[in-house]
Image 1 (cartoon, rainbow, N blue to C red):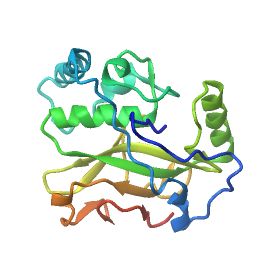
Image 2: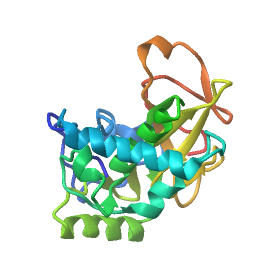
Image 3: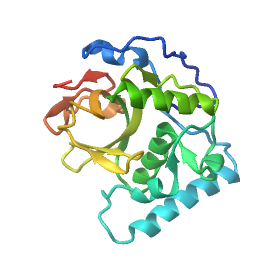
Length: 223
């Protein structure tokens, strides 16, 4: 799920890690994970790839609401394992993108519309069967399944800043908005972190009823 940039290193986690309790420890394995940033060659190839992405989004959006989620991305790119690192010129040609790459692409698309969109890192709760399936799928493709531990997974999405300053969370992997009430059960949000520029970090921002601190992991009430 996590896409490394050229100079990024991560700690590999294994299936031997125990399931984590519903407490602040829920995000401990991923507390220092950087969010995904796709690499750029600084050349025509990546400039052209970005121009194609933003042009496609404008064509799909037409005269619709700028805050509509870019569902066309999920229709074009399936969710699945991919090798790291990756550049923009490579990503646009892939048929499958992991959640980190999908989130990075969606952020770029929202920003091209003039909308503030911030990196959103999540820990979600599923079940042992689903986690084991995803773990095996990533291993089969020689991709690191460090994002799966017990019934919990690390995930990346997008925090869209609304005109009133509140957040809406867009999940590019499932092409839908994440509801603030999804704090229990299968696929529920157990913890989250929004990476905010320092200049805007002092402004209080909410996701539904949840006050979201800037640049800090938080356990979601009800988890």
